[in-house]
Image (cartoon, rainbow, N blue to C red; front, side, top):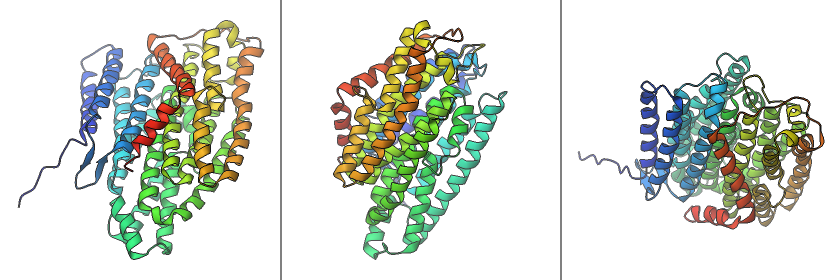
Length: 475
């Protein structure tokens, strides 16, 4: 029997990422300065990103696919990983959790996301999801002596395990119906055998929607997010708010647009209330928050609602707008968290919204950067956040959901209250406490990159949108 060795070209970035994470774990035993590990991580991720060139194709019997769609998401994951490492270096030293495995866990979690984006089979998808989730649970509880960090990890773990059970139920039902876990074969079987009226198919689709609803923190599956975001180390909150959310959307696009293509009307009817609820709860509850990490957690829930509009449009234009939205969200959200981290010093938390009072007088440059990120998150031109919303709204209008966009615009206006409140505190209040900044070259670099990206994409958005459209041309 002639067993052919699988072609490893499509899986090269994943193999390099695995090797990098293991090398970092071993290097940690040999080096005293943990900054070397951070530099190695960033350098390694850049090398892994380079291996994306020419890695397209399918392997492992069609279970793993490297295409434009997965490549675009992998770029988001790499941006997320590099920026998260940059904002972590000083922060984990201040929090006294400067351990080498921190960087390895970020890379292993990113590896899980990469596998999710390239999964052409539900079993591979599940493997990637668990690899991502388990690493992130550990990172959420990384400040071991802090009870809030322990609580964040525990809640995230319990509800994450709960959502994995929903996913496994959905996979087992779809396998029972079609006899396959291959995403394209499922679509083929459903259309050939005329299973669209089968209630078991609808049930498995709902189970998938629930499982991914947890991962992207859409209401009513968001209950873990505020506590997990508040308790986790701030650098990990930034990492969690972008990476796992983008991975969840990557899988949503592939599973629902391909496997469940023939019951499009049914799943769109499921996602519309999820989107409206996410925008409503995220934006309204954020108004009452006094902790900035909690406020950004609810803001993250609302942004999942906006990005879902791209999935609801259920066409290539919608997918492209959702992809560019997530790329822009990565820059503006990590930028906002970088400012939060800068306010953290040995004797000052900087988590409360009142800590930003009079910031413009003491630190005008930092206040100006926070203003840019808050404008972008609100969706005010000429920032990237405005363009992100514009393209997602246009795709929903073109798909015939004008009323839904009107609802989204109303909630976007509500969101201006709590974002602009931070700006009002910084520029229109007197400082109550003396705030000293914990500056570092890596934090400065992260803030520089995110600010330039938010402004550049805001002025020249077409390049990113065209990239997203090109990425799904073969989808």
